[in-house]
Length: 121
Image (cartoon, rainbow, N blue to C red):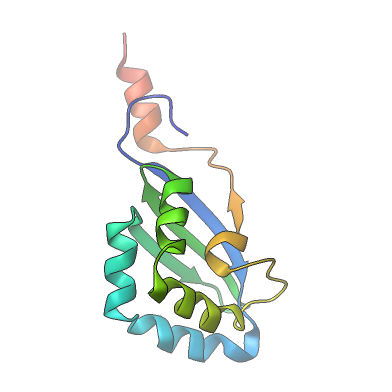
């Protein structure tokens, strides 16, 4: 988490999509259910992106005021249970639901944080 005041905690994570399911995974994410999109936005998942490498490595990024609250908020929605159940079969070695079983990566650099620190007297 950054040391200066920021409205959002930056979260980056990885998962592995099964190679034989990558085309369908892309298709499903080209048109995510509108109710799911609204649920994510209303529970604190902002600036959310997924990036998929040709070998199945999936990198996700989002910003949230509070990761635990964002995950709890989604867990309380019916649409999330349906979406996560359908998405779970796409991943390799998943421990739990995709939205909680991901491997969170550690942020080691952020341009804005360092620029802000450098400009502070």
